[in-house]
Structure formats: C-alpha cells, structure tokens
Amino acid sequence: MTPEYVVSIGRQAIETTLMCAGPMLLAALGIGLVVSIFQAATQINEQTMTFIPKIVGVFVTLLIFAPWILQKATAFLISIFNQLPTIGP
Image (tube, rainbow, N blue to C red):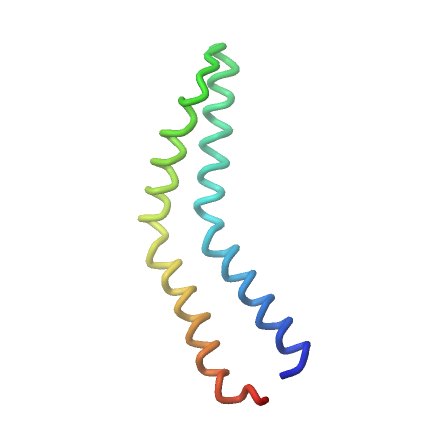
C-alpha cells in the first residue's frame, strides 16, 4: 500500500463526508441567516429562537436527502470493500 493510495482513499472519504453533510449544513446556515436578519430587524434578541427552526430545518433536509446520502455512502463503502483484495502487505 503506497502513500499515494492512502491519501487517495482519505481524500475520497473526506469528499464523501462533505457531500453527505453538505445539505444539512447549508440548511442550518440559511435558516440561521434568516432568523438572524429577523432578529436584527425586530430587535428581538432571544437566543433560543434560533435552535428550533434550525433543528426542524436540518431534520426536514435529512428526510429529503436521506436516499441520496445513503446512496453516496454505500457507493463509497462498496468501492472500499472492492479494493480490499488488492491491498497488499
């Protein structure tokens, strides 16, 4: 197993992780931005007001993107398992 091979697998793992987490992170970012603008416009500085919309938004996004995330994660794991026989000592 060469260092380039290990770096390649690590890069693929990071890319897969970012692709799977990306939709939820973007939803939390967008909802946080909207709530922040609303709080600034109305001068309401309640810290707990940001948590519930973010949690709901992230869960809804997870429900919507769950099949795609599962497909990406399983494709990555299948490719790793298929490469196991070729990994030498």
